Length: 406
Image 1 (cartoon, rainbow, N blue to C red):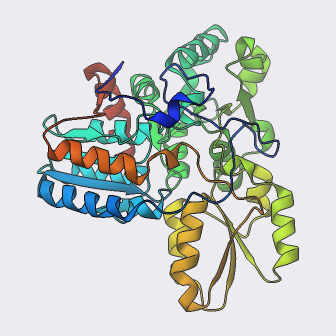
Image 2 (tube, rainbow, N blue to C red):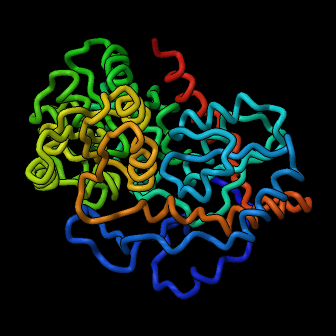
């Protein structure tokens, strides 16, 4: 359903022995990581910073483009990319920032594919959204395809409960999934407003006691919000596995459930474990453990604080000098925060002893950004992300329902 204006693949893609997703956007690591729910290559430190000439080339191209370009940088991006961002933030904040700049002809989204789709949905028809590397996908978003979700809805229909189900989809989903959600009366949520979105969903049914939520595609955010924030029990939640007949669930299980959780997860947040929490507490007495709600339920239950990326940043901003923090989120952000608050004597460490970056987010590097900016400056539109009209219509409907939440 999506169209892209592509360029020739970079040389490093040719040498990798990978099996592309249907969208040919997801590149996971070459080896399985036994401590993660899904394989990702965790090579340790990133290569040395890019050639200084690239920095000057990026500056020159951006200056040439002037107000025609607006560069968005997700919190998980490399520092060498973030330095050229006009604004930084999480995925939804950046999409809204783009929509607030209708004068910018080009929106260069330094993030991943679903984020660029959201920006295209929310910006004007005259604006062009560009993703510097089309291989920058999202493993979580790719865990729920339109075909799989349509099949799931058929299973719910055959079980006689589809009319009771309200879909709630995480922002970290494809435009197709957002459109499905809008078409079936549901809403989108972020990690900040997931509780309010679920409250809204349960208010939609004729009887709140019989209403169910299909939560896509991150099982952990759905479970943590329902159990930790809303008082549901773990028994109220079932996990729908799209790779098993009927999702691996019986009709009785579907009918009894309040939360039908899609079997998806974040490959970075999913690697944190209860052992990680116990280990850091033993190593750093008095440490505060702060994790993202995409972490597993047992990790969230063992943490001192839980919150979205923006919440993590604000919590550390307000933390007293001399405090100690172990953060369970993407390493680029944790390292940036550690450097930022070092002068305030705040000790900030990564929750896991094993270093792991978001492999797909890190595909946006300075060489790709330079190529993108220079191409645009020369009048060549590359890697445009476009969502087709019908998909955009229903995805925007779901997003607007979220925006209307109090």
